[in-house]
Length: 379
Length: 261
Image 1 (cartoon, rainbow over the protein chains, first blue to last red):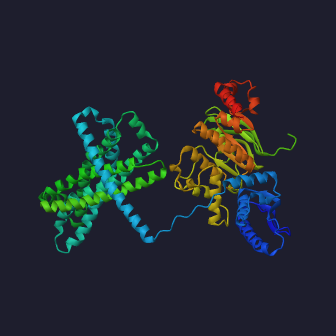
Image 2 (cartoon, chains in turn blue, brown):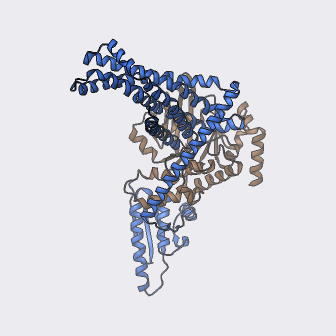
Image 3 (cartoon, rainbow over the protein chains, first blue to last red):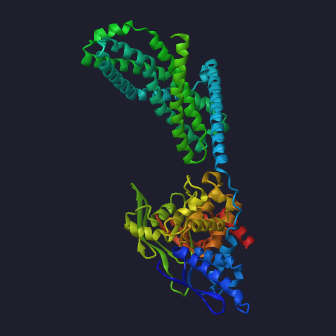
């Protein structure tokens, strides 16, 4: 609102305020009051009579808490108390008193620290974070194996309905995207491989190229990455929302074990469906490659099949063996992140994205470890 | 009352509905400057919907809502923005922004003021945090780190950040323990007196009504069934009103209030 304000220094060594002292122009008000009180302090000693100093508010039309705050700050700067404010209306005096009671006391600032120390601290905390994450995930793996063992020993305890539900969610519903992705990868491989191999007249080896790269690496790896993006985030979001609504605490009080009721069916569903998805991805990748080889190189499907059967079956085994390992890792990372969610929606969002990043990173890291392992054992 | 009363809120012939379900029909209500109006009613009687309609969050199908003389229904965004600087709303659980600390939450409304230096904005936010009775350290905490009562106080601090003339409170004491609720009632009385607030208070809590409300409006059957002082409510002959204001809880609340006063 557009009302003005005026601060004048009277002969009686009082500051006379007039007009509206409100939030809208509080910066100017505070600055002018600061200048006026400074002048008042400087001027006072030179005058012979120790004049009573203070602030006269009889002209103040509107005062809000911000205005009251500025007046009290000016009094504080001049070393005066609330009693030096006079002429304010009873309501304004009451407001001044309320604000004075709440005036924040200045707190000593925390001692400044060197940038190096802060960097080191951040680094140390990050390292500790990673160590704790690894320890927690190991604990979750143990928990999963324990619950799985219990379920195998007493199959009636296995939550079959939940298991089937999650198999549909993470397996069946992922089929279209996984198959399409693998088919396109097969097409791209054949196309790129063909242009290179044609230069050596080794066109027919494109079949080996496709078979080995799809069966050994790409089929399982890309399927795992898609599933990590789809499912790890879904697990985190589901469990995180349940954690926020205290559903998981409620389960504990009802003697339902969250690890058995929530984590076991989810991870087990992944262990069952990820190899199936990988198999479908392998078939789709080979089909895409065969189609492109036929169109681009004139390798007929029959010839493709013949060449394909000559490559070692080991490649399939090598690829498929990774699938259940990836499944356990993706499932555990997703569930673990979900269980870490605290009260706020903020932490839910942060952990959901973190779980995807962690799961994809873990999949690629483990794939690299598998490569080293396989080359050591000579597969 | 001899002085001419100024209607801060004037609701006339209000009708709201969700799909086929009619919440309000032909609802009239006035809120006079300087009073604390307690709005009560059974669950589903549309108390919160009324609050949301008056603050422009919900669009009615009929009637008019005037706040400070400005029509809210169908108001252009600029007019609504102008009104929003003059009122503060405290939602049920504080509705604090979870990604911000309490101080940053209180600073949000202050950011709309042009030319306000950061240091002053921070100091004013601290002042509001202290005025609602929160310790200074609470300013650095995130809403998820606070108890329910502290979240409500922080929500009140944010609602008061721009020194509104009109304050909307939705169930300010719901979910608080009796001590916390009583402390909140006292805070409300103190602040509304010191800041000259007009308060629109939606509540279930009889203790809060007795301690704070200068007038009560009962919502039932889609309209304001009766309005008046707490004393007047006890003489109303309507089954719900009688049950509410003369039931065992009402008598206990009244007795404890008289004992305290």
